[in-house]
Image (tube, rainbow, N blue to C red; front, side, top):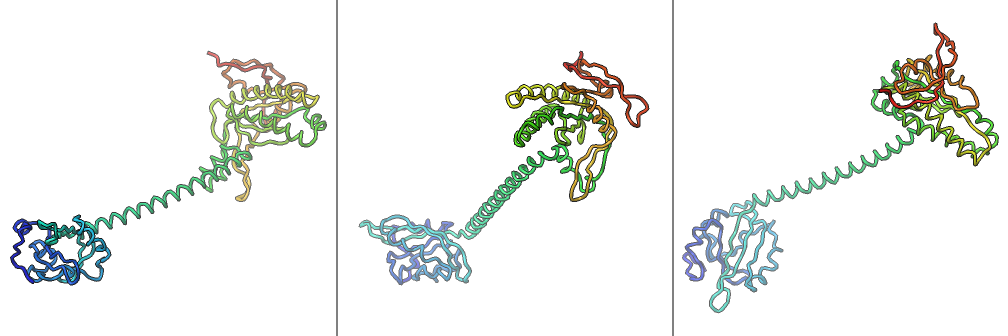
Length: 386
């Protein structure tokens, strides 16, 4: 049955003619082959390519095709019978077979007895919007994937950083941290470059340790040495020194290598005095364990050294060499036994700005030097002079 001029007074036909949205009015019967199209407005014709005359009396199923999701209609009958609007979205087809995504709502127009007189569908072509939504959804999914990948990368980097830090912390126990930092910053070739630096060199050697070691079991000797090293390391770190080597009960320290250090001679002298005092406190705590006393002989000298990595590509050792090192070692050997003594050379003494108390010693001759080297025994070192 074709209706070119619909007459149902319940429908505002004139208004529908001028709506920009596509509108279909169908018969109330939802069973196949119905419902039949009773009315299609001009917007429907523009959207689908079908003319009003072509679709009147036909089912809206003429818009369906292979990609139409028929499952969306499963609740259509129940929704309309309950007098509620039904909404859906799926792929439909124009007259020329081209696809578009249609979103529409259907309401029942009821008569005075409350029965459905017809159904009215308001339809929208949402292809562009749906495409944009799909792009946005894909972009969000990609963003989530990217963020998940980034978080996984960050987690691996944090894990790697933690592992490297553990390795560095362990490595620092064997190699001075400034040496490690310098090596990490250097290029492969520059690792083998030497440099001349003005530094203060300190040697500290224990006297009386042999007698104590003979009275203690091996574990006790190791424990005592480790306690001594720990106490000395704390003092050295406080004064910005770098421990280059532990040799038995001897400690080799530099101030100003591998990195420059302001007032290196003064800091070395203060460190020497503090180390002597710390050994005295170690003796006091050790009285409960062994009936013996250890003493520290300390020598400090300031001068030029050659610093650099020595060895092969497979094994390197950061080394400080030169007459300054040999002289500092010799000064340490001259420290008298039976007391905690810190000796400094004149090259150190002349660089002190702190109020210092010293006892001059007889000059010593140094191999390769034209004049003897003056020595001083530190007795105190205090605040800076005004």
